[in-house]
Image 1: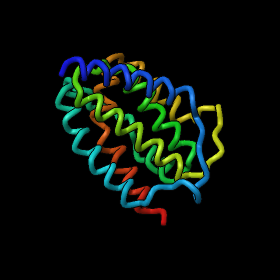
Image 2: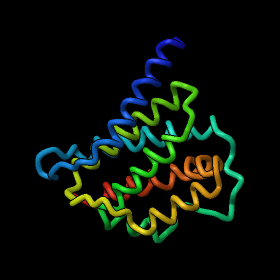
Image 3: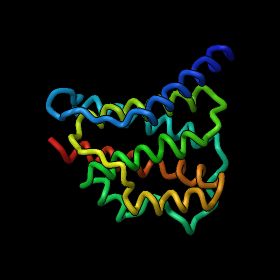
Image 4: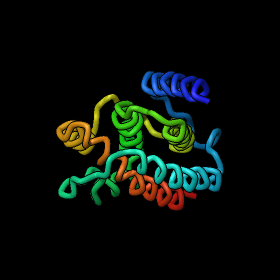
Length: 171
């Protein structure tokens, strides 16, 4: 069992490395998944996010919020911002999270899979320049040290609700 978990952690490391190295999006028409499939994936992530939250210390920083209302507006309207926000969670948050249990690894793998599926549905010209709200979010995230990881994970349900609303908005 422990060997299986170690192997999965290694697989996750390789997956994260590939995700960071490859930032390519496909066209909408050819490779988009059915909206129901994506919506089910988000529902599954809600459950797994709750389990993940239970494995980390509680977020005690109440006066700082990473995902704000303005951020939601950008997420709903700007495909570049969506990609950068999902990359922030994959690379910065989950990349710094020390995965100790297979449950955590499962969540990160499923989140990565959802991110890839979403990128196939959204036709968007990628840009190497980071948008200012992402830069600000990273500054806050890194400014509060390891507590930034707890803060970001505590806000996963917010991000997942945005993804769900986004999926419901496009037809």
